[in-house]
Length: 83
Image (cartoon, rainbow, N blue to C red):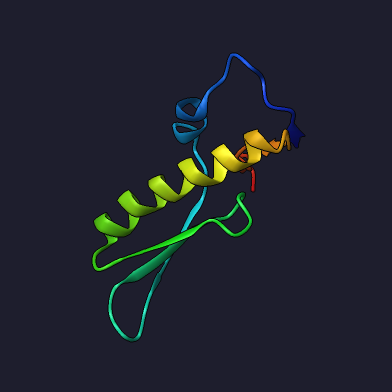
C-alpha cells in the first residue's frame, strides 16, 4: 500500500526499509540491479557489492524526485510467513 510522504521521514528512512532488490548477472559482465517497488530505479556494477552501492545512490535520486513532485512513496512489499 502506498502512503503519502510524511514530512518527518527523510530519504535515509526509506533507504533503510527492506525493499526487494533484483540482481541480474549480465552476459557482458557485471550486474544490474533494480528495486522492485521503485519503477525505473536501477543501477549497474562490476560486482554485486558495487551494484548494491550504486543502487543505493540511484534510490536517493529516485526518492528525491518523488518527494519534489509530492508523489506517493511505495513501502516494501513484505511477504507473510505463510506465503
